[in-house]
Length: 312
Image (cartoon, rainbow, N blue to C red; front, side, top):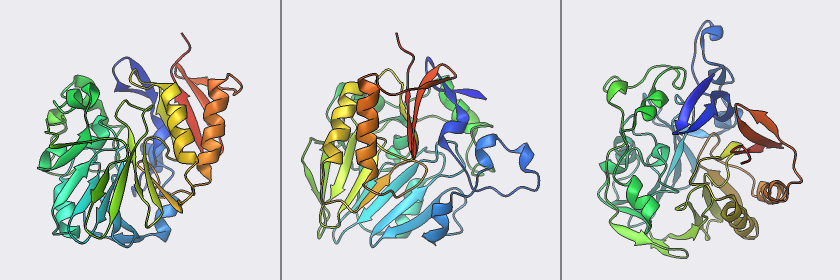
């Protein structure tokens, strides 16, 4: 089954998702809905179990994963709380109010920063007044919002599974404009009071891609630079050479005990970054083999794959 992900590119829906849905006849569900739940979630401490759209998990003290399992991209936003402020890394799809969830987890002032400005990561930005981001044309353009027709495909079957929130009208789905209130650059630190969070620019997936690093607690939040599953590197804004450099950079980091990716599963072993670097370098040098799936090159490796556009 093929749907639009971004203009001009086709997406094979099964590459990026499994969702927790109960149904008597699973043959009626889209294929990506049938592999549920992802086993990792069974071992995590779930909070706010009555939330109708989001699933919230405590990953570490003061670190919460806010997961959207009923949409095929399985986006994960993260809330990190300090003594004085909280940092919300990404705001998800904008299908339900992430601000309401955040307000149940903390009463602290909240800074939003996005791992990048693709629609599935900035959907709730407009709910917040303090948004930090990269100073660049790509981010500024995306801050104007998005109401392109292809976006509505994301909120209709087979790209959603189970009920959408009652107050949500899929016919009106769009990304609302938002305002960047503070620009960040590589190496900047965000002071949450007793917790310092460093910005690491990791361009490649997009021109404004970044990771954030909690050195004291040895946590690296990888955004879409790494997540388990097919990593999308086929859209026009992707620069694969820059992506390889960014992977090289984070793979060389020594003081990291846990990765926190932005899709599919909220935690991963840092050792996989070495495998990701070797894989990306093999693709770059033409040494890796690929298969063609719905017009995209897929390079499969243990625990992830790299999806690239067709060769010119």
